[in-house]
Length: 413
Ligand SMILES: Cc1cc2nc3c(=O)[nH]c(=O)nc-3n(C[C@H](O)[C@H](O)[C@H](O)COP(=O)(O)OP(=O)(O)OC[C@H]3O[C@@H](n4cnc5c(N)ncnc54)[C@H](O)[C@@H]3O)c2cc1C
Image (cartoon, rainbow, N blue to C red):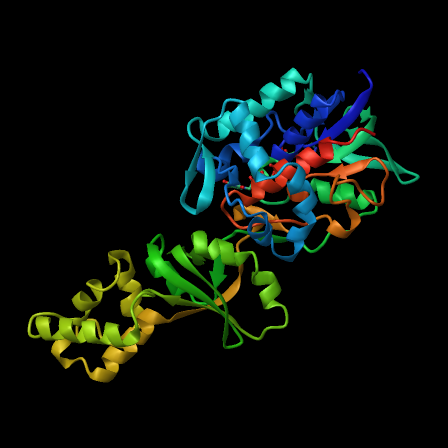
């Protein structure tokens, strides 16, 4: 094989963007990919539609989405941020559309279109892709990567980029190998947790409403009796707890909230736009109207989505067959309190198998933010989810890949 300038481990969005950039600068680039095909996770992103970035144009607001670690991204974003990402794909023939929450998608063709564009650019830059070639290890000598070891070969290059992704959805190829390679080069890997993932509850009753999708609800997080965060939007009950967009977004913070806390609960408000007083009034009106011909079960059914009735009847102390005219004022108040505050104890997260991204990764303290170059190993770089960075849903995670991939591909060794 000809001399390799840049060897990239992993053909996901971060590795492909690094390859496009490095080859455009005249580098001889090789991607080593363990799967038969590259970009498997990219293809399922956004349910195959690929929410590839976000059009939030205030950079500080964008960066704040990543929490405290976001400041690491300033430099990479100022070079190749969300605006440049959109321009890059538009200039390569991708029409884009903006949807709720400033989410940006290809207007047609979905994830496949994004992957095709990256592969066309790789081809133009003569990037060689070694498919079905898992990297087994890095050999490091005198603070330099000497070679990467595959089953068949030892591959040498001037520069190496680890873009192996995290541990989430391991069936797509991201099985956490990059963390081991980073450690072989002397790097620290912070504690790893699944993020953007369904949440398990101590209570088993959510299964009574398994699959029930709730819109326009508020979910609060209660830590040791105090509200610490909340989200408004969509969620659903599952066999083991809760899921859906607002749950997934909150899930990323659960490991840090659990530390040192005695109890962590969700409080679900099914009627966030109505006060307790208004709800009591409404319920009393309903009771007067239906006295003599309705039982509590049918009253409850008129207040919550159909799939939720069984669960609500289970949680309420009012017998389901009680005639409505016998429901007392106290029972009305208790039922309204339930609609405004369904409590669930957070018992943990679902596994990496169901997580959209990984929380944790290669410590940012050991990486140069403008180039993604290792501070410990001279010719080593990182890009994408393998880094200790993750964001909420809305295109923020793929943006990490585009920006860090571009930065890592920008330096010639
Ligand atoms: C279901 C789902 C939907 C998502 N939707 C969105 C979305 O709409 N918007 C968004 O912003 N983000 C989304 N994400 C997150 C986003 O897909 C990831 O953040 C992104 O794919 C990470 O890219 P990466 O290049 O760092 O790693 P990956 O995409 O994981 O790619 C890593 C590559 O490295 C290869 N590899 C790993 N180990 C080795 C090895 N030892 N040797 C050789 N190759 C190796 C893997 O096979 C893989 O091809 C979604 C994730 C999931 C799971």
